[in-house]
Length: 368
Image (tube, rainbow, N blue to C red; front, side):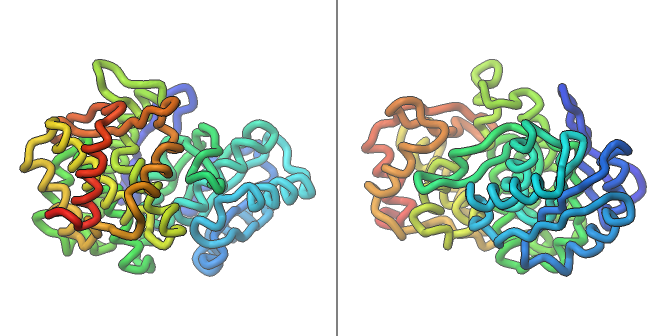
């Protein structure tokens, strides 16, 4: 802890820091380094005003190419990535230059992918502006774009040079977006840090207050969970002692991605994660792996902060087909990260289709 900043180191072959605090823009030059001449600032178009202080800081030190991106998941396409590549080429970006992202998870994913693929990899610093991006997309080096077949099916691993989680940006975040970010936070409570669940359940109002010390601690705890996981399994090759490794971060995501696709991304990612976590809890219950009290707690914990726990917007067969192209599928065998106890994750491969249907019936509200 330094002043009002919390610095969480991410060790490994390419170590970097995640800095959590307020008004962190002045840190950018120190992270980017002295050798950088040009910086591309990739920002969500609807955040142009908020991005101006970051742009001003960069302009004082570098030649800056400012590239506005479509808002939300529309940014995560190969056509948008191609536009960015063409702009970098026209501006003469070299391997010693850098990318800075400013925005939510979609901006971070797309910007990270552009940085990973331009000249086979240039430096990138993420400045996430949403709770979801702070605790999920910005940390760990995963990048990606969507295709017609599904979400995040094209991507690469590319660790950032640093991450600046400026909590001041959360003050202007619409409440529905802040609430959606808590979907990933609560997920971290189930897979690794039950203290998160206790905090959310005991004071949900503080968890939704962008100025509260409770929300700051939730951010810090969630980032620590992600750091601990990715350091042990950067490229999702598997954990030790039966732990799923990095795959655990996808708890609830197989169904969540299917819901997002089926809803044409009208359901926010964090909302879909909450529903997806309820789904896998019911799947684990149906398979005889998870006790009733832990399965039931999924619904109460997510609901405490106003997140949805049911969804009936698509037929089971449609969602099942979408799940079969999920990244965790091996051949024609579905794989789900499930729990056999609180903070005790495992992989369930090839689940009984009757159990998949039972979990869907609960998720869709067809069964109590």
